[in-house]
Each structure stands twice: as C-alpha cells, then as structure tokens.
Amino acid sequence: MNIIFINGKINTLDDSDTTCTAVGVRNGFITTLGTDVDVRNQAGSKTEVVDLKGAVMFPGFMEAHNHLPMYGYLTDGIDLAPSNARKMDDVLNLVKKEARKVPPGTWIKGARYAEYFLDENRHPTRNDLDQVSPEHPVILFHTSLHACVLNSLALERMDISRDTPRTQGGIIEKDPESEEPNGVLHDQAMMDVFNKLFFSDLAAMTTHKRIELCERTVEKFARVGLVFAGDALVVPPTLNMYQETLAAGRLKIRIYTMNYAPMADPLTGSQIKTGFGCGRLRIGPIKLFADGGMSNRTAAVGSPYLTPPYDKGLKIQIREELIEKVKRYHTLGYQIAIHAQGDEGLSDTLDAYEAVLGPESGNPLRHRIEHAGCLYPDLLRRAADMNILASVQPAFLGELGNGFVEAFGPELANQLYPFKSMLRAGMTIGGSSDCPVANLDPRVGLRDAVLRQTPSGQVLRPDEALTMDEAIRLYTRGAAYLSFDEAFNGTIETGKKADFTVMAADPRQVAPEEVPEIPFVMTVVGGEIVWSA
Image 1 (cartoon, helix red, strand yellow):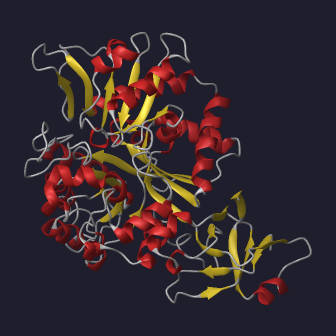
Image 2 (spheres, one colour):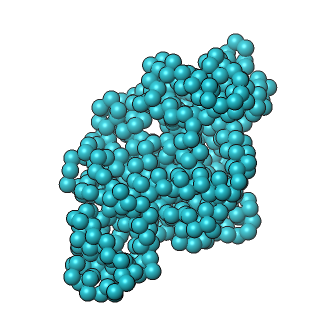
Image 3 (cartoon, one colour):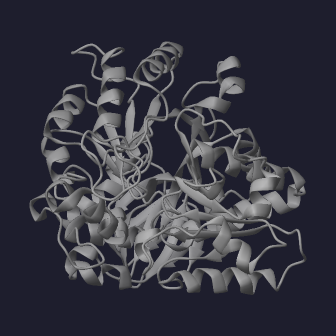
C-alpha cells in the first residue's frame, strides 16, 4: 500500500452503513478497510501513515452542479453579496472604489448582487453606474447568473443599443420613455455578453495564466472538502483550460463537463460521448436550458410572479425546439442535463424526455433536470415515473429564499424544492451549490437541506426537510450516480477510488445550524492529500 489512514472515524456509507477506523490505499484505490491493527499489518516499510487523530472521514463530497471557471473569473472582481452591499449606495461606492484602482477603459466586474438584497429593491441601471464610472466599462452579475447590468460604455463595447433585436430566451430591459436599454440584461442576452467578455479574456491570457486561474479555483473547492466538480456550462475555451491544467499535472480534483449545447458541435461532430476521458477529466452531458432563473424571476411559470415586471418568466427555447434537441442528443447517445426551474419549464422538459424514453426504459442515459425548483406533485410523479435524475441546491433556500417568497408568495414558495418528496418517489438527486450563485461550501448545503430556513428565518415546508444523513448522501452517493460514478465514488469500499473528505466532527452529531462551523481537516483525491488544514 502507498498510504494508510488510521485512528479515524470512517463512515463508509455503504449499504450496511459500515464504520471502521482505518483504510489502506494503493495506486489511488482503496485496498483494505478495518481496524488500525488490521490495516497496519498490511502496510509495507515505505507506506505513508496518516494519523487522523479521531477525525471523521466520509466518501469525498461531490459537487454535482457548479460553474467553476465563472467562479474563479468573477471572484477576482467586486463581491456584491449582502455582507458587502445592502443598499444601492454600497454597490455604487464599491464600483467607484474599484474605478480608482485601474486605468480608464479597463473592465470592472462584480457579482452576487440581487435587487431583493438591496433596500431599494431594484436593479442598478446604466445611469447609476455611469455616475460613478463613466470611463470604465462596468458589468455586474446578478447572484442568479441569469441577469447582469452594464453601464453605457459597456453597452457600447457590446454593441447593444435601442435597435438591438430581442433574441429568444433573452430580455434587454429598456427605459419606457426613451426605449434605450437601461443596462439590465436577462438570460440569453446576459449569456451572450458574458461569453464575449469571458472568452476574449481567456484567449488573451497566456497558458500559464489560464492554468493558474483553474488551479487557484480548484483549490477553493478542495479547501471545502470537495473532490469533484460537475461544471454545468463547459464550452471549448474552458474545456481547453481544463486540458491544459491536467497536462501540467495541476488538476487536483475530478471534473465532469456539462457541455453547452450551442457550442457543442465540435464534440458531437467528433462523436466523443458522455464518459470519455480520464480519472480527472471526463465528458458529461449536453447542457440545455428550458427557462430562466428563479431568483431573477425569469423561470417560466404558469401563474404570474407577484413582483413585476417579468409576468410569467420566459422560455429559453420553445417547447418544440427543446423536444427536437433532446431527440437529437439522445439518439447520438449523450446524457442530457436540462436547466428547468419554473413549472412551465419543467413541463416542457418532461415532455421532451417523454418523447425519447419509453415507460419501461429506465432512463439508461441518466438524463437529468438541473435545479427542479417548481417540481410540483404532478410534475414530480412524471419525473419519477421516467427515473429522471436531478441536481439540487439546498443553499438556494438559505441564501435566496427571501426572494422566492417575495416572487411566489408563501403558498407556492412552500412547494419549492421538494427534496423529501423526490426521495420518497424514488428519484436519485445529487447535491450542489450552483456556485457562484450560492455558497460553494457543502456544509452550508447540508445545513439548508435540513433546516430549509430563509435568511429572514421563515421555514419553507418543514415536512420536506431531509435528515442530516440523507443530506450527506446527496453529496456522496447521489452525486456519484448522476455522473455514472457509483462504481468508483460515493462510498468507501474496497476497489473504489480513494477520494475522502475528512472533518473535525460528524455533521450528524451536532445541531444543523452548527454544521458550517465544523472545520475541514483534509481532502484526499486518488489517495493524494490535495488539501489539509
């Protein structure tokens, strides 16, 4: 054995919930489990011995849905989270401060604002931003990553004017009197701008700088116990960045790519399918969008939002187009992951899956729903009947829940994210953060899966709360199944990959609200300690 871990409280999460104190690893795989004496007796003279000193080991925590490159890219900008910005003046002062640091003409980026976090309960506009930064192009991203706001110079750089046509699935907000863009963009309009900016910045970086960006961001995942990231919006430039980092030997966690459909032709044309790759980097599903976001109120819903101006949200593509795309990628043999939040978006998604899955098919390609916010009982039954999988984000409730209550009202808000009902119906669901939309830290997700408490303290549908054990399984066994990894990850068993998350205490043994305070001790990927406290 290359390395053994002893003197721990090892929770295998296998079918029998076996526990032990030691685990042995050879060439990145688990070879033995048992007592300290058992495992030590099988070690050689050159075996590395790691004393866990009573710490608690779990199968490595897995992040089923996130935006790793976006997270790294945007965290270099202004953080507009509520801890930093509670009113419009806070936002503008942070932009003004940044403008003083960089030469005129330099892009200023910020992220994680939301109108419902601000006292004024509105988006910043181009006019607001022009007042504090007329000589720098400014772009601020909504916490949902489904909206952004640009100042006048940024709009000019992106060729957006009153004459810019509206695209399917996108909104360019306009001043009702002048009909000029007010700077706020939603969904496809936002994505078009982000892609232009991000891709040009990536292309301008040297290979060394791209690798540094990836490695620095991956380390943030490892610091919070994560061994795996399902990147939910991979395009050729970001896939290239992962490949460069892998070739340099600096990709320290495992990446599963969700490949953005509008830019997936090089992949599909080469017939590289879901599952292709190596232990650290694999091709995952084709990623499609049915509708917009919940927290910016553009998810497609049947009943109008209680707060204007987005009425019933929007569909990124019409139902018939979605069905045709699902048929195409299913026939080609790809797993498919569809962003669907509103009940109308979810209904279209299930229509598309029903068009390719027979009642007894069992969903062998493991098609997925990403988020599933408004999975009301009739929709849940349809999803469960087809064995559709879902990635869910418990921290949405704890961080964005106030906005949900405001948009939907208390009755419908209490039907959102029905985690317990999904499990009872037999659905496999995997935990994630959708970072940078919500906090990357899985401890926050564990807490919020159990408490379901909004920032204001309202508990949304307590009967949908998970036990802490169920919540942990979202980030281990559940997430592993979503990416065809259950044979190698999700539990600690002989023959599986030696991916471990080690914590100072067991989240099941403390109050849920205290879980985010439990320190991480180390993160292990393939038997290698990739981070330690």
